[in-house]
Every structure is written in C-alpha cells, then in structure tokens.
Image 1 (tube, rainbow, N blue to C red):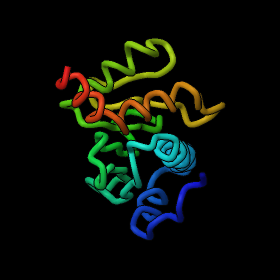
Image 2: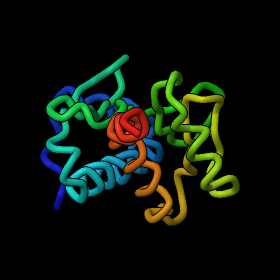
Image 3: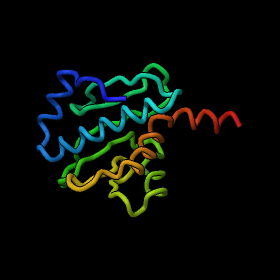
Length: 141
C-alpha cells in the first residue's frame, strides 16, 4: 500500500521543517500508512495537524494512540511523538534500548541520514497504532 496524497495543510507542515527532517519524516509517514494497512484492526487513518504537526489518528476504530511527526527542541533529529501519558516510549525503549534516542515519555528520535530502521520502526508504529486494542485485551483478562 502506498500512502495517500498529502492533504494541503499537512504538506505545508512538512515543508516548514528543515529539509533533512521533513524528508526523513515523509519516509516515516509512508511507513505509518503501510503499518496501518497491515493491521485489519486499525482501519483507515485520519491525517491532520495537531499542534501544527502532521498527526495520524485511528478515529474510525479507536485502536491506537495519536502519532505526531516533527522535531523536539535542541535536536537536529526527526521526532516521532506520542502521548506522554501512554507507556509507548517506555515500551519502545525496552524493546530497542540502543536503536533509537528517546526524550522522556514523549518522543523517539531518528537521525536524518542513513538507512531508516524500518523493521524496528514498524514494531514501534504498530504498538502505537494498536495501543488501545492491546490495553482492552489486557483489561478483559
């Protein structure tokens, strides 16, 4: 599955980023859509802006936690941002302690050059896109 065309306002948000960060985050965007398509439970994604940054929501199914793409202060890296009230970044850190740089409970940071670690990122994105499903299953036990 290829990612859908960029909505105009989301395209502007990517264009406003420094070019290397925007380019890297467009690669992540494609991976978000591919990961979502691989999960029947996720359903279609809503692509919008949250706090001026591209955001990906599972509005229709409510399966996941919002994923935002942007940058964090004092960093020249691309950032995948999640709700800081989730356990997502802790889970990412647990699974991939040396693969990525993290910021508190909010962000996974990626270098803007080199190969994108697609396999590890797919795991992280999948965890975010199914976060509420996983929690519902645990509560039901």
